[in-house]
Length: 320
Ligand code: ADP
Image: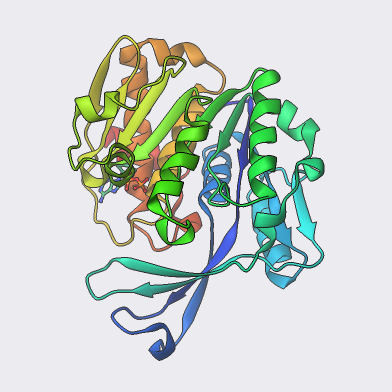
């Protein structure tokens, strides 16, 4: 069990997921309300594993916003860093489940409350108490959230936090691929730890190669750890001194939503109190095996938050 605080910055929203796949949104017989948003998932992944986390972001002062804040609190996530916007509503995502199992999203964000977080509204006390500051808001590109994002990163860094970044690429939300690349790269070299998916690696390098060379082309001098997650193929890790891979666990996958967030939450929970792990390949591999186990378990249940594992569930898979 870790004791250092992990602060996760970004959005929390509700996914409306149809009860059947292969039909249009309008034809769906019903929807499930699934709370999500990658940064919020990471915050809950941490507490579910017994760690300490806080969420920083803005929700609408509406039924959905208060429901989401309640879910964070019920899960033991510190909520003092949450702001409520009086005017704008909480972000919503309407999901279509295609017959091939892929998901398509339509977002209510015109603008949603998360996009309207201003630098002045940030709870700096929460941010300064972070041992690890995790970020990667999909609202990075819009003001005032962009300025709030940059300020939060700066304050956390000054206070000595380890900075962890997941770009959470959501192309339909960005004006263009070019702009998305530019924005992601503008905060790239502030991070100590970066996790990208194979899709994000391809997007950022502009090549369809997923190998060591393409991963290393994203390296920056201050980086301590770069991770490339590969779904059912596990993950690759890169540090200044060593690199390698960790295999995924074989599980019965039903829904991969939240696997990456579960993986990140697990990694951060294990390194928050002991960053020397990042310099020791054997210990890092052990931590990444744990993170892969957490990611795998998350794919065995529907939704993200309900599927995030406890430490004992992860250890059962790990040692089983
Ligand atoms: P992201 O959600 O960011 O795309 P991934 O889907 O690669 O991330 O998932 C993160 C981690 O979760 C992977 O590195 C892997 O260890 C585990 N994982 C994801 N999908 C599966 C799967 N189908 N089977 C087993 N493990 C998985």
